[in-house]
Image 1 (tube, rainbow, N blue to C red):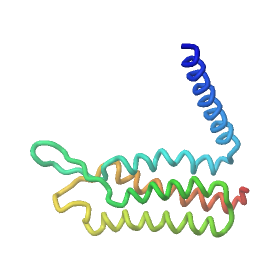
Image 2: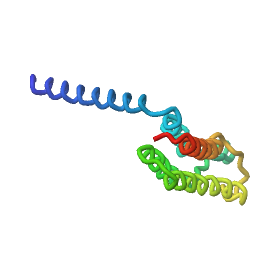
Image 3: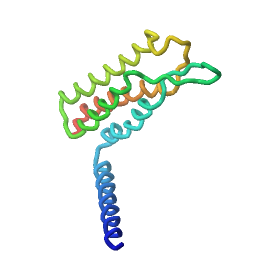
Image 4: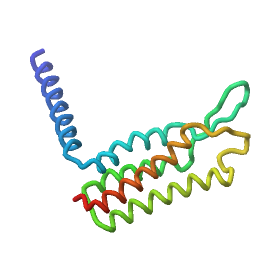
Amino acid sequence: MDALKELLYSLGSFCARMIKTSIDWFMDLSLLNKIIVINTLTSFLAITLPIAKYYIFESWTGINNPVAVYLILIVAIMFGTIFFHGPLVLGARVIINIWYLISVIAIYATHSISHAPYVLSAGFFFNLIAPVIYIAAAVMVYLEGDN
């Protein structure tokens, strides 16, 4: 029984150290890089929430964004490039976010979301907001020269 207590204590203290280290790392970031990290929540909502819904069989059915899976990679790239700076990083950040933004707008503009009549839902707006925040924060980090 003492071995189990020791194991649980060791795991708990390890998790506590990891959380403390993560919080310290986050607090040491500049405000703009904190915005990039916090925007992960907006991106998570963009990925999980349906972008539109339609009424069928007396209930509302959600339609997911077919390109939202790419936002997972964009989040990883934005998070990973916090550690690197320069014009190449800025170019990569801006290009991938503009590509995603254009693809979301194109899906809406071409009515490719659904053949059924649909109503846009909150997920669509999160899909527009997340890359715009990423682009703005990336440009401001570059212009500020935050290294």
